[in-house]
Image (cartoon, rainbow over all chains, first blue to last red; front, side):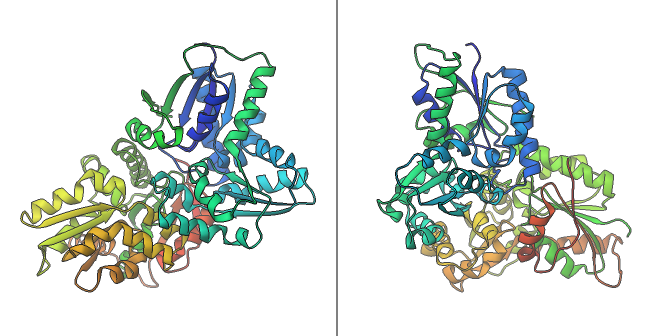
Length: 265
Length: 265
């Protein structure tokens, strides 16, 4: 199937990124790696996340000869991207810069909000990139750790989920931002709830959607693009039980998941 | 400091068990191991949890020469205990049997409830042990995965937490059990909320408290008990960032945590 694009995430969340990648690059081959034995990454340290990310990237480069690495996890993008870019020859695409560029291109971007895991927000990666792109903007970053658990539990439109969203986003409602970056791959499944709470004045920026656009540009411009018929070829690799991944993952991918392989790193 | 008792958990939850151990065995030495780089265990498979548990137990046996292993994690107790007991010479105490014996000794135990992580409930460990001890009892087991995230976020008495408890425990309120086993080390911090929801007719059984009683009996009866003065000697080992462990852990231990060491397995 030629050289695939490697996509890695701590678990199922990155499947929302893969869904966008498949939409913009339907003729491509993908290897998706979910580190389900060590998920989640959002509460863990830079050292640990970098070690895990390098182990996975080594595996994908050596065993699957990927032509590009998409870090489909905002926490790994925030904490491990500099190390990954130093190590590998292939292009490494993260979640942060594509969303920041999208925000910078909006007609109105005086006040910007970012939500993400504790690790993503604590790293300051979004804040630094936004300050450098938009030095005059007012920026507010809010960790929302429980939203990952709610999304994985499948509690998408329950009253409890609306209450948790209201609790985390209360500071944003008093002073609604022009744009809110959904800085975690789990959040797109909660887009409707978030958008209802904030009202229509805020543009929601989906980090996976923006990253997929960037991957499309890089692949097309470098002449690496494949035009296979019959839809994309996808392999799924996980470090824990394949059955559970397929079950929970279908909500995130929006499609059936078959043939998941187990990998022990 | 002589041979310590090894206590291991996926993260901070097992500190509620350590708190009980310190209370009943104040002259003892303990080594607490929190696998914070791979936490949580509650959603992962038997194979993965057994592999992690054996790695940790090997480390504690070889490097710290523990005289007893307390598996202070209900998920690891449910999934890995048979393997651990086959491997090690030292006694291995889990969370399941002590609570089941406590329930069996209650004057009224016709209807029993168990709450725990998905892994604990799916394993059937509590259900099997209860059926064998109380063949005629009505048993209802309910996974409550979000309660771990709420407890770790420190959202102990918020309205959202009461709503989540109400959602999971709704089947119990229609038909309140005589006893409810809190089959996850995180749940004792939510005891008040759970008890208010169920009313006074249900005895809440804290798995860590029951396990600590069993450890006390085993240590005392085997002549391994130490009677040091000046309080217990405790070492804390974690696989991720020591600072964060100390910060979150103090709520669970109910005491200050100093000198946490990082271990890479």
